[in-house]
Image 1 (cartoon, rainbow, N blue to C red):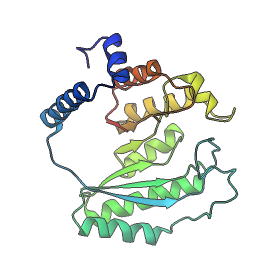
Image 2 (tube, rainbow, N blue to C red):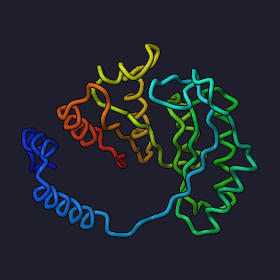
Image 3 (spheres, rainbow, N blue to C red):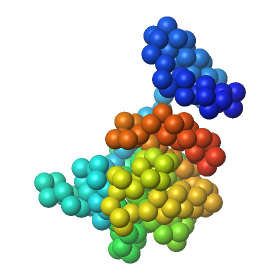
Length: 220
């Protein structure tokens, strides 16, 4: 990416010539193989709850949606899933849910992490995708055994971020959480939505530079 100017990146995002695009995709594939290899690793995704305190406009499980059938898995159910993933020799699992920030939930996740670590002797990698939390909560979950965290920025354009979230949501808070995760030692993953109303190619180029500037480990 460092070899491309901003103008060149904008040009490629607007490119429609299938021959030129085929060449770009070949180069991208070769780059990926060179840096990360050609293996595909399976990861067990455990959707442990769709209860959420946030009201993001684009999200189907936002708290204001009255048509969602809500659920929350028990500790035993989550542990059963983790055991199954471990038995099938998955390298890692993801615990994903809607966002909650109460102490009961923080302690629940902490206990689950500790039990998964104990039962698998630390052999099963654990990624969390549980939204914005306090620094203390991120620290507790890291010490309990989670070492990767997914937290999508959705867009690095703060004005666009504000359009897709209610007024009590904060771009600065989301960014601060990502930086806290990196500081603690998590491998941090984030990502953006493509095709948001009002999104431009310039926004997408800025997203790419955002990933580089924040030293993001996983991108979606």
